[in-house]
Image (cartoon, rainbow, N blue to C red; front, side):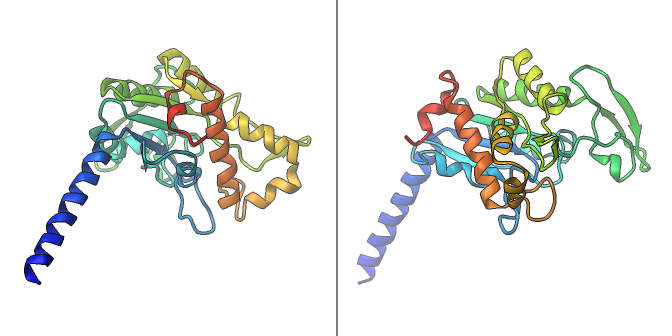
Length: 256
């Protein structure tokens, strides 16, 4: 009996080791962003929790490293990007989407902690925190360039996404990000030769068709955070964006 149990234990260990080896061999798709990508999955959901449903997970791993409340700046400042970067291996992918938490004036107040400079240029502002620590704050585009270039340096493929649209309508049409953060995300992706998925446009097109009364059911508490149904709409937009570009290598991992 003891011998049989030992044999079973050994077989299980071999099976687990084999599974771990297979997972290590598969590429990994890493998601980085804010609460619209990774939320509590209770009342409000991020699209990153839904997107695995569209992939063949026997061929690719998906890890959602997005964190609520983070901007491009604070995702780096808090060491979250360093963690993802340390995990990257050749053949992996990084989807990056930010914009909802960048808007405040960057300063040393609580409100300014996560703000960035607007645009894609090389402008900077120097901050000195009460503890004497100095910080150089860059533009939204600068932080994206850092993500893109460091992803490429690891032999992985960067993909830039525009932020999800908020539940804000004007003259019967949803307000889009095509004059600010969505525009800047596209520009940096083009400049750096990264794949761009216009999730903002893809979802906004649906919102315009459905109308404000239908769209508001996706936003249970505010104009930014979606419920599961709303997160599914955005995940579908990402999948549509992948399929629309035959050159996107993630096509081979999508379910038919």
